[in-house]
Amino acid sequence: MPRLIQISDCHLCADPRARGRRGVPLRQLEAVVAAVNHERPDRVLVTGDISNDDSSASYALARRTLDALEAPWEWLPGNHDVIEPMAATRPLPAELTLGNWRILLLDTHLPGKPHGELGEAALEALARRLAADPVRPVLIAMHHPPLEVGSAWLDAIGLRHAEAFWKTLAPFTGVQAILCGHIHQAFVGRHAAGEGEIMVYGCPSTIDPFLPGSETFAVDPVARPGYRVVDLDGATLTTQVQRVDL
Image (cartoon, rainbow, N blue to C red; front, side, top):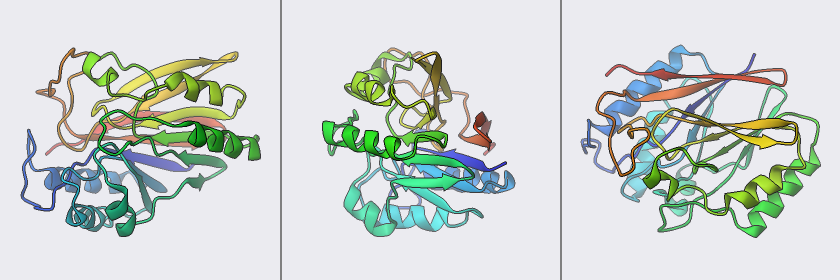
């Protein structure tokens, strides 16, 4: 069965020696890439916050590091990203195909804002894309989570007007799950949809993990960097998080 791996929130700087709160982001990303290669994925998707300093050099460093992946990889922007240098380094696709699945990549970032948004035009375009192929199962990838994750400070900077997003999805039964970044932690949520539900999965960061359930900003003192493994079997999705020793 096809295997997709999600990496998220790398926060690289132009200086490869730059430090985060709990280590060197480049070294941590390199360790995650090495671990991902052992999973033998068919595709890798990086769900935003590639850069931490808005520099072209940080995107070039990310590309060189991610090019060590032994599977094709793509990325989408997060709230820390700047579209122009990111897209100049590597294109930003809108859709991928993996097996019989469609993977739709949505851009939720707003320049200069920590929260995300999908405006009216973006939601109308999403509805057209879903209506154009109502048969195949769909996985949506985006940076900002479209529901609350249980941390007050993160919920304040999630996807604004999420109710409009869920209303857009409501007529389309093919949407099976959503992958998001931004929250730097493993997360599983669900949204009722008709007679079923759409699952929402968050991904650990390759750098500083955020403490789940925290009212204010806090780094988890014990969690390790990680990634999410997604196996697509027919119209069924199974997923798990893997952690990386440094």
